[in-house]
Image 1 (cartoon, rainbow, N blue to C red):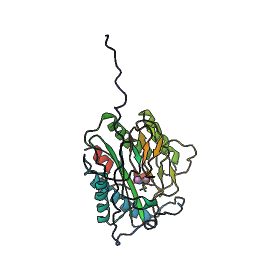
Image 2 (image 1 turned 120 degrees about the horizontal axis):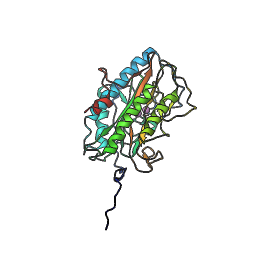
Image 3 (image 1 turned 120 degrees about the vertical axis):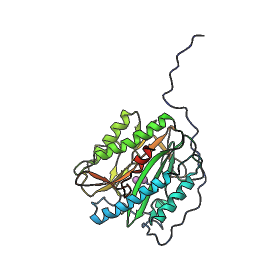
Image 4 (image 1 turned 60 degrees about the vertical axis):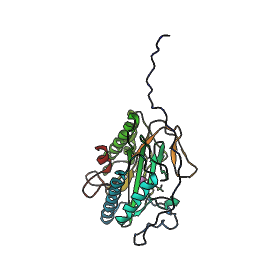
Length: 309
Ligand code: MF3
Ligand code: CO
Ligand code: CO
């Protein structure tokens, strides 16, 4: 029989879907740590229109952001095949408390854990559980802390052991997509410039952009009503002004952008099972452009640190 030329596959063989594990009991926060208003009831109340931050608020957000970055560096070092996402939650929780902050996700709208851990086709809001990370996985760890009355919100997608080239590229392009979005930010730019830059870059790299989950105003509130889509939305004409603070947190997918949610009502996955990556920073608009608040006090940015490892 004649040898037929077979086209090499464009996508890696599909791996078994992420399995839900067991969620451990709720972790304790010492009473000496100041809590956000929703910590007791789970209800953050109505979100208010984003305001320009005061100098004092920005100072505190710099502290909250640097704690979040320190925690992400610390927990990121522990990402390795065999560790459970519950253990990563415990490591992050203990470090957040050691640094004097409250882990913002804990009981936010009833969320049961202190960080979100989103593996492979999980897009966002994965609940840490007893599943062990496997060689070849990718995992986003999303750390938000509450400190001096304000939140700092940041995430990185980590490679677990030896990761296939498609997933590595997905992670790298997503990290750079966040930078493309941030680079548009200045006093007088528009919210839609951010999504336009991210979407253009994602599509030029054959990746899709998640639409249902977007960046948000952040400060005294975890999520204020300022909405930052990661795709071009011509209605997003809000002008960015010096002192506004918000996140940019693009989620990019190897396959399509259609999502669904697990019956735990938190875990969001791609419907086609293809992988998704995310990176997130909290920013403030400055006279010169923008400042990344989620960096350590010595200027280390976790996403860059782990990219160069
Ligand atoms: N940190 C996430 C974000 O980037 C929000 C997590 S809310 C939680 O907005 F309840 F899932 F923790
Ligand atoms: Co966020
Ligand atoms: Co986040």
